[in-house]
Image (cartoon, rainbow, N blue to C red; front, side, top):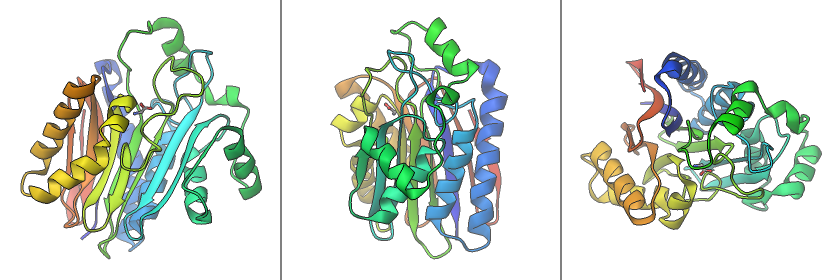
Length: 290
Ligand code: GLY
């Protein structure tokens, strides 16, 4: 049985953009479903889903990602293959049209797991990953967030991600983000950190997190959640929510997460006001939540 779930970020998101978030998640998920339906790999499905979310300026990833303290877009992304623990990630990259493509290229190269800054851009050039003028990553919504949201405001919607199980029982997770609004230049969040914002292991599950990255890094959130789920697999949504609440109570911040278990069950949880989500499974209809 295949199954897949994606998120468009957790946060204090205005209800004005509910339709855009639901439709954006749904459209991206359909690309992943198509891959899984024809027997494709979970890894391909999550990368394609996240790629579509990066293309949608409604979300804080890829085109339209939010800006740092200097008004610049810089992105983080990661992909994890549950089949062999293949892992590729990039941090603080500017002008990469699809950061998830670069993360996947890092994984496929296999020599390292995480590349950051100018070295990551050099690697992108060598691998033929599409680069654009960093200014083109900004859009009216991302600029508007910078000008009209105070530094103290919670993020409007943070990060995109997808997790999936394919017909062969393999799992994968992918996450991509512009990070926190007005972050320090050079800041890297949880999304590209293995076991914090992104993780997949065939025998445990796959998780993609969204929210306050420092919290997820300091609690090794994704791996911790999967460990807890392996001890109480009968109530995945409750366990995920408990892990989320414990992490944010300990460190601060808020967020959300999606997961798929080895048997294909999917779940999501958030302790923010909203989080756009879309999910589907073999023989079951696509659903969305916000
Ligand atoms: N969760 C995304 C970030 O903090 O960068």
